[in-house]
Length: 178
Image (cartoon, rainbow, N blue to C red):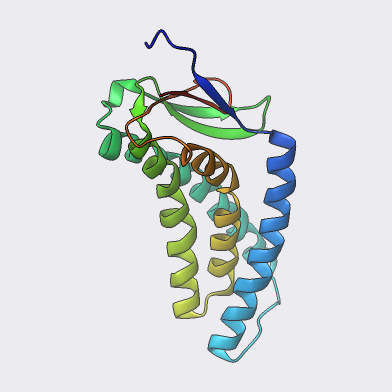
């Protein structure tokens, strides 16, 4: 790799967890109220089936969130499939997707935010369009779940688009080489 010392961007997992809770509450309230205004009704009754549907859909979309990071690495960073890795870090309690190949800063920023749009915003818009209360909540949960991606994106904005970014395969860290 590069012989210069990298600048390390590391997620503060405690701050991220706190911010995730705050954004989850704010986005659920906002999207549920918006859905209620659009459709002139408020649906808050949850059946046991609805609860299991919510949990199952959330798990599937978390998996898809990581898959969209991988797709972003391939599409924007031109990474081959063999350079990708994904899984669950049980110690940190997070799912992850990573690439062994360094990317340009421009490609990494796009790959970081792709899941926010595809697994958060799109389900929310569909839920709002059809008046599906559960889909609106699931979308809000996934938008809030991208808080770590936004933190990394915000930090990467400080660097030129042609800087080289290397993803840490085990920890929520990025190494930036100017």
